[in-house]
Length: 291
Image (tube, rainbow, N blue to C red; front, side, top):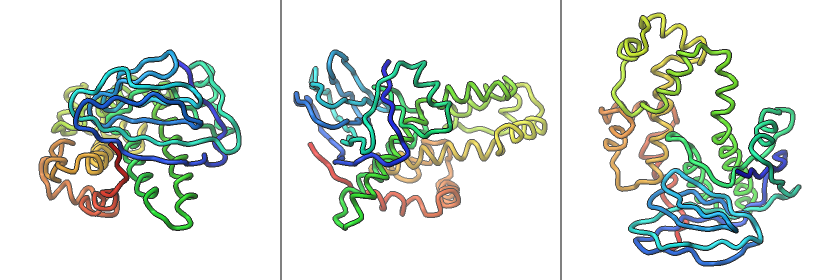
């Protein structure tokens, strides 16, 4: 897989963004553009080809399209389709393409900030990428004199989040050399099972630890308690659902992320985000749409 790498010491140049929604039979037009385009699918499946590479992107997957390269739909979508898109350029330097091993080495070099973007990938269940897309779209609809600058910084934040997402596992593997294998396995298991009803006692029994010992050693290596770690995963996913699924009630979202008590979910959300879940949803409910 190829990775686009560029200097991140300055923001990229934001051009445009939107959220395409279609009820059925969407087929992407054949075209070339002069900018990069990032597409992240929220619902349905997008069939698209760029150059000689063909993709079938399902929810949670993204693709990066390159300038001056033909891209087009390969088959119509079946049922509802929704994806976020943004166009951008690099202001201070052109991006260069690297193979994965070279890109990984650059990511671990913390002396110089870089955008490191794979041509395609799958986001984690608690990814912040689509939340940042919604925030970008909210800024894009403003018409004041600062909106263009704000959008460029928001687009840059989005790209840096994709960079972090794609290399997080590699970085975690490096860090896990310092973490006991059982704790590293537990952290990964919690990221996959945050949406179920869990207790420290039950988790300790599953992984063969005494609850008090597990609580102590987990905090030593993660910097937080197991409950705190779980809640952070749950709130991150809840933020995605609040901005991408307007039909879901707060109670349904709470249940979806493993919190069956609606009032407790609302209190927890406000504790972590500083505003209520309702206010968070309303703040990013208006965004540009295209069909």
